[in-house]
Every structure is written in structure tokens, then in C-alpha cells.
Length: 425
Image 1 (tube, rainbow, N blue to C red):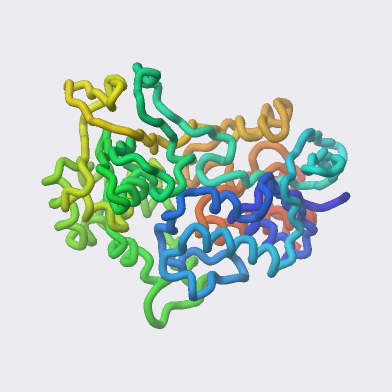
Image 2 (cartoon, rainbow, N blue to C red; image 1 turned 120 degrees about the vertical axis):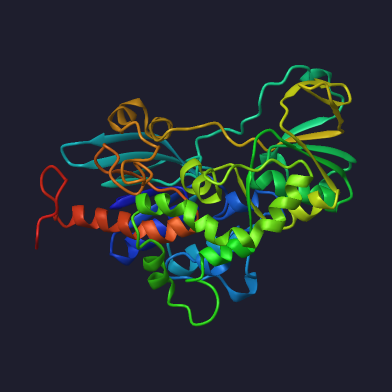
């Protein structure tokens, strides 16, 4: 089988890139390790929703159905992705993994051996390979659970948030959720609404904003008389990211009054909040973590239905729960660690997908470059014909067009021999 491009991963980024490439006439195959497109969203906890409004999250060429609601449940996102692939006729192989990969520099061609469940291995050649294996984690990361002494003495159950599905599957009454990001709050909210005695362990400050504040940031997408999405995108990213980062403090100050009562009420209940310079926008764009967009958990905290244990590290497990470094104890039948995933660099992902020889040519990237862009993503990686795509639904829609155009420019011979400058037509 011969394609111009192969995309590894059929999530929002992989599908968006494939759609952009096919729209430019570039034949593209997408490989997905799950049984169906959208399964990465189906496998999350049932109460998960998008943190941003539906109008901000459309992928190229196909919008979310109106019936999904303003904030789209994860099951509807999964169905949308599956319908997206079907509507656009994208070529997707499910239950497929790369078992071997080699690159011939003389012909600028990849040769991929692909294992497909229940079928004989197939060989595919392509000039470009795009890794799109997950949001933030790049798909190679593993759930991270901190090592805490006494774990074997605990008589209850311990799980990571990646294993959690719904409070309806839990029969215990005393639940401790360790972590204070979006998933931790969502799970704590789900458990408290189910009638469980719920404690949220917050080890460091969390930046909290309401959905009302998010709406103010996204006025170009929601409300009356808004421009088409592609025009709204241009307004949204009109300023260089470096300039936007410098203006974040002023932006948060302008909107601070919206969430003033929310922050004050949380503080009175022992919830830790960061200082004004370490604000939500800084954590969203630079740290990429340590924030929560409130969808109801804050009210449960301020009403006493969720107890916050903040500012102290866990010392060890006891048979009946957790003991903290100040000597205090929290009883638990179930401890859920919403503590994220191990850090994975792009170089490590390249090695896991394509082997050490390819990884050696990839720049050791993954942080922020001098232009405040995520280095090595949506742009050349250091290895010819190898690209990476990652991000949320907005990033998938917006940045996929630039990756597709870069690939098309190379296919049309519009680049200089060093691949750094464009040759005028």
C-alpha cells in the first residue's frame, strides 16, 4: 500500500490533519490502535465534558451537532469523531499498530510494517508520517501515582483517575481524591453528588475560573452575530503568543470581578489559590496544568459537601485511610489518585513509535521556544518526513492547516534544498 502521508492516531489531531491533507489532494492513511474512532474519549469518566463551548471546538469542515449542548459530553465527542471520519471518508485502520519502521533518505520514503488485529501484517510506504497519539501526553505517557509508604496496609481500594468511570460503579462511602486539577474536581463532584463522603486533597494552589470567565475570553465564538469559525480563529490568535503572555496579568485583572465571590468563598473553606501573577491564563498557556474551570465542584466545596484537605503532604497510608505530615488523618474506603501522567518528551515518543535511530535525529523538544510556541509540534522535528501534532480540539482545527500546507509545499517542491525557505512560484 502506498500513501503520501500516514497519521498515527485517530483522535482530534490525527483526524484534523488527515482531513486537511485529503482536502489538498494528498492521500492519507490513519492508524488507530483502538477498536473504534473516538474510543479514547469513550474510555474516560462518564461525567467528563469539554471545558470550552461547543462553538469553539469544531474540527475542520464538520461542526458539532446543535443537540450536543453548549459543553459537549465525552460520549458525544466520541460519536462526533466517529461520524467525522465517516462523513469525510477518511481512510482509517483500527486496531492497528506500527511494528517496524525504516526511512530511506535517498528516496525520502518511510516503509512501515503495520500489525492489524486478526489480520496479516501489511506494509505501507509514505513520504510523511505524523504522530498524533494523544493530548498533552503524546500518547506515550503512563498514569502517574506517587509512591506513598504503607500502601499495602491500606484495607480499602486504590485507583488512578484513568481507571475511574462513574460514581454508579462505586459502592464505598468514604472517598479521598488526591489532586486538584480538572479531573480531580470532576470526580470529586461526581462522588459527592452520589452521596459519598468526599475529601479533595489539594497539595498546592490551584487557579480557578468560572465558565462565565471562559465565555468572556471566547466572545468571538459564542453569542449573536459572531463571525464564521475560521474568521474568529484569526482574531483569536492575531497577537503573537509572546505578546499575549505579557498581557495575561492585565487580562485577568479586567475579568477578576466575575469570580471574586467564587475565590473568596473557596479561600474561606481552606482552598489554596495562587497569587495574581501565577494566574489561570499563565497556567493554561505556560504550565499547561494546575487549573480548574468550575462546573459545579466549587459550590459543593463551599456548601461543605466536599471537604478540602490542603497544604499538607501525605505521609503514609494507614489501614483505615491516609496520614498527613501534620499528623492529621483522613478516613477512606477508596483513594483515587488524580495525579496526572508521567512526562514524555517528543524524542521518547519518536523512539517508541519508530525506534532509536529515528529518535536520534529528532530535536530534544517539547518545551516552549523563543516565540512561545510548543517546540517540535505542528512543524519540522529535525527528521525529514516526520511530524507531530497534539493539542485540544481548537489546536487540532487551527494548527492542522499549517502542518498540511507545510507538507504540501514539500510535495510541490516549493522549498529550498535546506528546507528552510520557500521558493517563489
